Image (cartoon, rainbow, N blue to C red; front, side):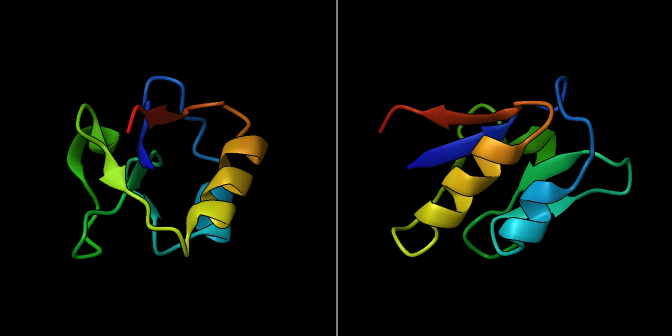
Length: 78
């Protein structure tokens, strides 16, 4: 699965980071983003390429998608 955060819709609630801190990060501006393969926060929420989520993290990422109040976590086609 590939995902990114649409920062225009992000509310900065931080539930994504709480559920999957190895996948998501809250930036200094209060918006969420995804982490790259090295664990570093990606610019622009990871758009347009997104971050790869391996199978061991999929369940937590799907939970984050479900609870996100801004509904801003986007899945990209595989």
